[in-house]
Image 1: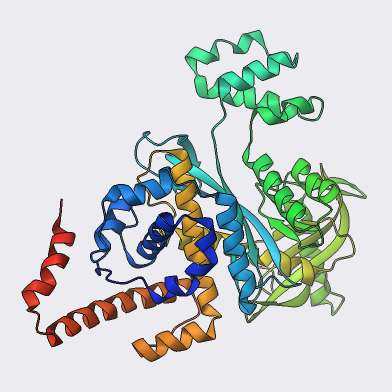
Image 2 (image 1 turned 60 degrees about the vertical axis):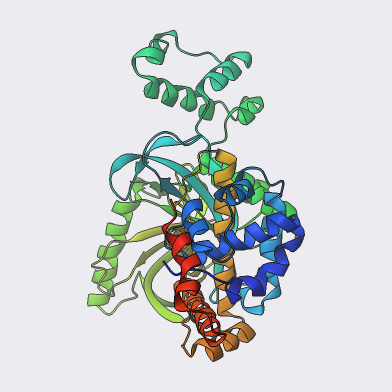
Length: 471
């Protein structure tokens, strides 16, 4: 732990964008909190409070920022996006893409409000976690979260009452599951709710699933930016017919979704899985190549984050089961098609493989954000209150955005380079280490200045030692 005797220059440089969001006292706590998230390895309130050795206050001051301060999360997010819009390198661009994904914020124990036992696809086991849904902006120069929300588990009693009030029948044979297998009863009741949404729209407000949450976030984006037509991309979990129809027919946005090999395509000779269709096309391709004919999969190049990537693509319009007519792209990475294919669909029937592949490639940064955000403390909270956890997540998004803006800020880059004599790389982790290095530099200056003024090393170190070692 590097004791923090001054706010990092990174924080001081961008803090004015957020001053109107907070009261004067809360603004100081805001700067302390985001400084701690950047500099400290321990991202909890206690860990951050221990770090602030020369501006030391009771831990309750930082707690109040998260639990009692009346600042608006919407105002905080607007200030964050205004900051990013003010830096040319992080301004949204014509070729930008909105990616959607969610991530688990895992914790031990059940003492957190609205925590749930959720399946972790990375480990293959169920874990106690909150689930964060994010709409993430990406272009070739930058990327950052735009909107985000924590999912809340379904209130089974409220959902059952709402379904009955809407005269939706529930099977009497399932009633015993309430006591014998509550998780099965929950799955059943949510399944009924999903199936009846179209015929009973009055039940939509009974529960906000991850899909409806993603729809709500996108609706917020479109309402705030009616002239923006950025394409939306998402993985196979979000590529469901109802969600795609919402993006297409309600929001009127282009999308690129992801299908699996088990999804089905309608062909002239009947219906086939995409996996079987890809095998058929692959065989036709290899035979054509061997006889100097026209290949089925053609090489394409896309630019992504300053690099050129090559794919071997099939692109055509097909009718997909459940989705209707879609532009279908099947991609391989190897020229001999020896790797596994990927399947993308788009509602823009004139788009070509290159454009669809480029847009889909920009889904990856949202996963990177979730991982790098965890390095900035996204899942390192000990707060029990759901509203406080939401504030913590929003402040981590501020930190990530400051680190992104700094990469394109030549003035800040020159200042830190002149002070620290280090070369800064173009990623958030490098700028976080630079802020930690500056904290070490400021500590050295404090000690050096004190010694030059005749203070003893013991008197200079005593408050640092007390702050670090206090119970």
